[in-house]
Structure formats: structure tokens, C-alpha cells
Image 1: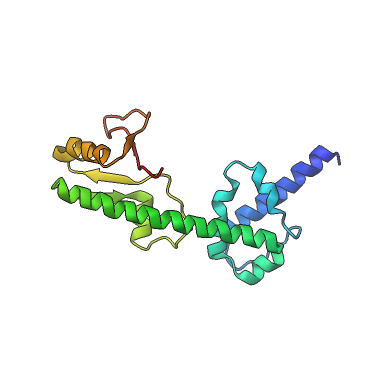
Image 2: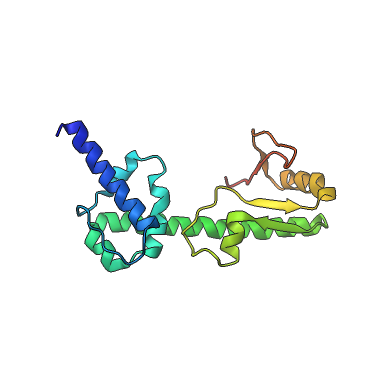
Length: 172
């Protein structure tokens, strides 16, 4: 094996472990090489996005078998970060609901964050890239203006016939 093919093989092993632990059957033993080197995940685009899911659905004893302490710590930190982001998203939804109340319009939270709030998704398992809301059509323009007045920044993404351009929360 060449150094290039060895590196590719190791990377493939880490990717297989990540997919097995994040999406495979919970409780099964990992039959691949150990310890899995999570530093290799840095080379994967978005590779760390699945780590909170691994933490939430993998028994600690299995992680002890699969990883060194540094790898376990990295997964735990990613999980804690994901939960902190969810808490921020929930607080943002509360503020959106208050804003909708001021605009005297019903508000429906949709998709990922709605599933989190309703308890259908375990904390830290599914990161939301944004918060999708549905507002009654007569109030869309006033709600959008209120978002901007509250500090939201219109994004440089075009709207469509189905929605207005995205507004970014002041905290990002």
C-alpha cells in the first residue's frame, strides 16, 4: 500500500465507524479497527455534524471500546455544543412567538426546531441550520419588518414566491 492509499483506507475506516455509530443499529459492536482516530474526521466536510448523534445513541462502554479518551471528549463536547445551540434556538422561537403576538398574527414553527420543541428528537441529535416559520399571509410583510426592526439582518439570499428572503438572528 502506498502512503496515499493507506491514508485513504484509514479515512474510510473512520467514516465507516461514524456512519455505523450515527445511523446503524444501536447496541451493535464495531468490528472495525480500534481505536478509531477522530482526528481524521477533521478532513471530512461536515464530519463532526454526526458526533452529537453518536453520543446520544451509543452506550458509554461501546465508546470506551472504540475510542481513546481524547476522542470520547471530542464527541461529548460536540454533543454539549449541539444542545447549547438547541437551547438558543428554543429561546429564539419564544422571541418569535412574542413578536408574532405583537403583530397579532398566528405563528407556526416548522420542521427541525418544531420536532425538537415537541420532543420528537432527542436533544443534540439533529442540528437545525435555520428556523422555519409560517405566518398568516396578511401579516407576512409586517412580521418581516418587525424581525428586521428587532435586529434581524436580511440575508443576501433571494426569496421566492413561497417565502421572503431569510433574516439572520443578531447572534448569527
